Image (cartoon, rainbow, N blue to C red; front, side, top):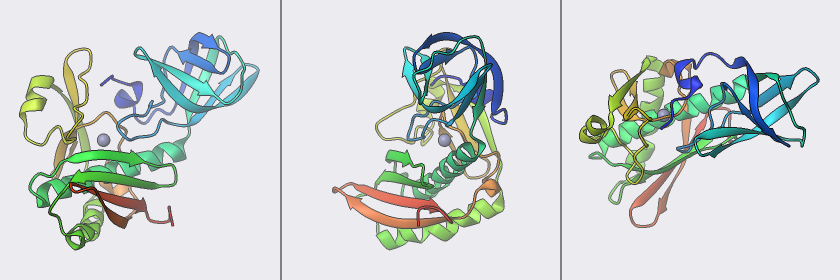
Length: 241
Ligand SMILES: [Zn+2]
């Protein structure tokens, strides 16, 4: 996975920077506070402001390791710009993302190391996770809701480490996705996210600084998707109703 500015400075949401390449409706920036999305997480939203205008950043497009910021109108921007991430959207993604780690950790611990087969965070404050859980009882899965909220209440801190890829592949459960191992950074390391006292796993997303910064969550529903997959849909309380 790439190392992003938002990995090093997750609290910096506004950056003064320069356009390094432009085409109508899209720019490459020298530096960007935007997370480009990936691994089920949506790209940050926000705005670009320049001397004579501003435009919303509607999505980010990765192309050969570079990140085009797409804006909703066909203007061509050059020179100095201010890039500003929408703080409410970032906060919602970080809450949902951190909560999916908590869910994922509890499923891994309670269900014999069951792995993730897919994940998607949504802009309406909901998220789904798919697990390889052929034998699980859905009532036991539903019973994880108060446990997730208990972890949120415990306000466990998150911290990060970059570990060599070979070590990451060798530690049981560190690569939690059944099909996709995150690609290493250019220096051969993998970013590991730890919820202290609960869980460690490789991930390139944005998270809270501690679990207590999340609103409580509800498990909305559990679906059987094929013989092996169980899909768990969660929502931040107050969203997705
Ligand atoms: Zn993550």
